[in-house]
Amino acid sequence: MRKLIAFLALVTMIVAAGAAHAQEPLTSIVVQAFDESQSSSLLSFPPNDTTPSTLGKFAPGYTVDVSPDSLWLIGYGYAEGSDTLSLYYQAVGSEPVAVQTSGGIIYAGFANQSRYVLYTTVSGSGWSVGTVSVDTGEARSYSVPEGSGQPGQILWFDEVSGLAYVLGVPAGEGSFGALYRIMIPTADSGTNEISPPEAVVSSDIPLSPDHVIVSADGSMAAYLYFDAANPPQNYQQFGPNPLFNAIGLINLNEGTTRQLAAAAAGQGIVAFDWRTANESILYASGAYQNTHYIVTPTWYTVDLAGTVTAGGQAMSDTRQQLGAMKVCDNTLFYVIFVTEFSQGAENLIASLLIGAPLDSSRPPLEVLATKSFTMVRCTIPLAL
Image (spheres, rainbow, N blue to C red):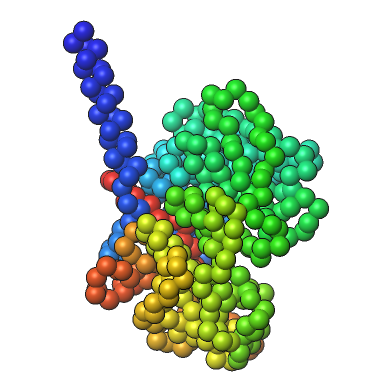
């Protein structure tokens, strides 16, 4: 009896510790930094710190993700000498575990609670969604009914409810633009079939990959788009850069959309993200100066009522370009590209990762300076 009581107490402690860990704020930023050979390292930076923890290393050409709790990694790409995409996951510091897939891999990432790997594949017979439990290794694949279009980016997945939002290509169409709601069966549901994905909004909403962000609670999605009624002024086309000048908001429960914020006349919007608690969005906007990029953009915050508040400038050097941004709890992390033009070509000199506290007057901190990196996600700090 004493052993049983002790065992139950231990289980209670483990469950409580796991729940407390899951509720910790996502304060760190993880980046994928590339070397000259295009091999990469996953680096985790806590707020106000320039010394990263290395989570893992990857061969050239691999797309990666890290779980929100910083304990698990995903890599998918072409292994050396192979013409087939491979997918694996691993605990940080451990050996990788291969995931057997059928068809080409479109996307792989982690569920919100970090306990499942989620991926989509496509083949001649249609597309499927696969899940792998990182705790047990159990892998399941769910066939999606025919006529459901093509899969794309999984934006949000709650492993408890099975609810997921997927950005994909509607059947018979040739570009991204549909936001689907799907229910993915849980491991013990006894079925491998998913009901046909339900379009949340009509496919004429101009959604594009990497420019749609679902709120943490899964109730709303914000997206950047181009409003043709406000054409850019003093803009010089250079390459295939997309233009954005407005932020739209989708109520995912009701399927309604509305414009939340817009750039000033002739100006554009370059980056955005939800702030903590999903009550407002932080974004950067400004003017072109006979350039293909927005020069010295200004930070703005817009709440869900559409009230806009201006902040400071992202940078003062007119030769620098603002890249992506992520709000990790109370720190804004953003990318600055340092470039130069030579003989009609634009050359990347350096990429800077900047961390700016949102809850204090401390100045922005240059966290990383290297040739090339991408931000992966905000995470709970890695406990070493």
